[in-house]
Amino acid sequence: MRALVYTGTQLSEIRNLPAPFCDQGHVVVDLAFCGICGSDMHAWHGHDERRVPPLVLGHEAVGVANDGPLQGKRVAINPLMTCGACVSCVSGNEHLCEKRELIGMRESGAFAEKVAIKAQNLVILPDDLSFVEAALAEPLACSVHAVRLATQHADHDQAATIAILGGGAIGLLAGKVFLAYGYHNIWIAEPNPLRRSMLEKLGNFRAYDPAKSDQCPQSVDIVIDAVGSGTSRRTASAMVRPGGVIVHIGLQDNLDGLDSRRITLQEITFKGTYCYRNDDFAEALRLLHDGAVSGSGWVDVRPLADGAKAFQDIHNGTAPPKIILDIL
Image (cartoon, rainbow, N blue to C red):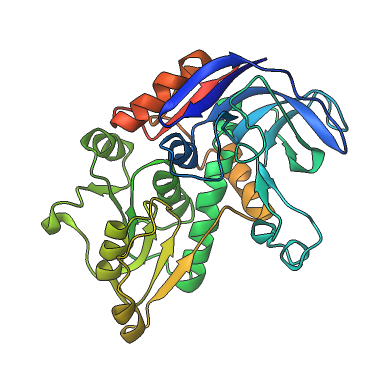
């Protein structure tokens, strides 16, 4: 089978690999589309010791089940593999499973024509939801989970001022989820002028350059840090209001930046968020199916054969917030 293989720091190439086979409850999925995630870029840059080349990355995938109980069904892949038996799993917090794994991390991922995964990780797609839209379900589920955590803390006040740091896919999707839930005072910080222009064309957001202090909102109720750098944590600490909340979803680095003194003295909540619960994934598919969230105007679809260039374009800052690879 054809696969895009991460071969070393900032290197990837198309290779022919043996097709996976199903065993012990696994199902082979014939893949149709797979999005490039920020974590794939993190690995490609050589910053993730868990993802050791050569490795097939990719986990934002959709396709058709080749065998098993869902054979012939169009499915989205929930790539988060869990034990189903630990305290976190039985309480509905599967994403916090002590034995969690993700395809494209230690196991072969979805930038390929086929992937093997347990049947429990497959979600049947509505007949009228396109594969391309459905390929946004996994990153959208991450944003749904982050927004749910943020709004719970803010008592679901739809008049809240929201600042999203980072206009990539996760930040943009978080903004779209807030809009779908009735929030309207949404700012998105994005230093890349191409992306900022795209955000402005999408409407309903106030896109601004974080390097220009006169454009930055102040005393913000909710900050979504979709970058996760020392710089963005410093920015979030300064802009959030007393009693506000910072939801930290980005994982760019682990450098200092968080103002723990201000967080303590001003009773600011700092909340980490990782992946999503199963019900967040279901909610993401509902939002896509209902048309409340879509990829129109900010998603670029490219053939798998051009995957290496897609990674390079994202690195160079010349790509839209999301590139989805067409594997068909």
